[in-house]
Length: 210
Image (cartoon, rainbow, N blue to C red; front, side, top):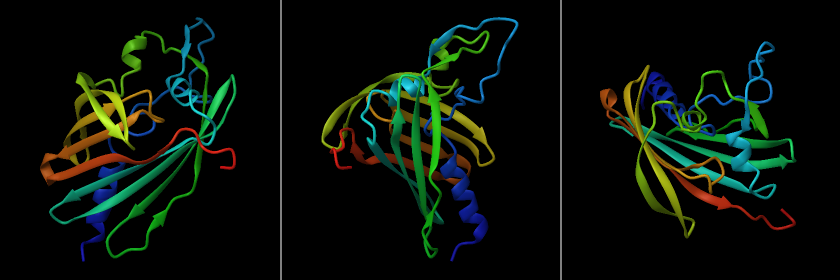
């Protein structure tokens, strides 16, 4: 049986790296600073642009497995388009965590709303802000099979520094997929911890009864 500290560490690693907003804070309905002295340019919100192209109730399920010499945990994340209109989209998510020898932990549903447009932060270049993270470097493209469909994805790579140590990240990214994460791999050298994430279910056009 592994120590509780070990599982806390692996859970921390599971939470690091990319997620719905690709590991980067994106201005939303309530978090965008207001600048009354200067009108900042309005641009399309990247999360609205991504999710609004799908039908309501479309959903995606991703599985993340974090492993090192001591064991592994599995984090499953389901995300869905809860509602949309001309002004905003609401995206639901629910995370389940599985640890060996422990009950499955099913977290509460979380709903986040994104406006159709937002004010670009002063001095911020829009193209750079649309990257998965400011550190991300595009290194190529690759066709990835997702549920039997070929998806052309951009590949980004970068390094994060966090409590677990230096971590390399490789991300396959496509706006054709809800949440944009097609696949990702992370590696923390100090603990030899390997993280792999992939899509295990994708429904873009749910039936009328769903």
